[in-house]
Length: 125
Image (cartoon, rainbow, N blue to C red; front, top):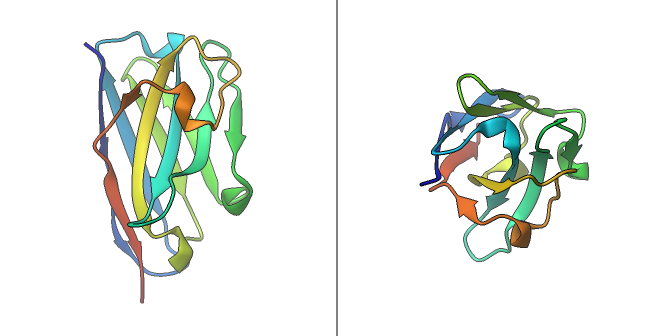
């Protein structure tokens, strides 16, 4: 049974940093792509970044390019999202999602079958 658990969210000041973690179980992580998405209440889910299965290609949405970095530890079965230079508009609930053998990865949420419960990120003074 595939399960994902996010953590690392919290309150941070503008310009600050957070590192989100997505711990996976029930799978061999390097066979799976992981996507990070975010969603605010009443708004559509937005893609943030993804890392593909096997070779691990990465992709970033334009709003986070140069500020966010996705990485994967296959032994720990954890995918990280390092978020630097955070802005108030980055405030959202962040979700990780996974799908088998998705390569290159995609930022289309429809491609992912397994989702975590989300972790709240708040950026405020």
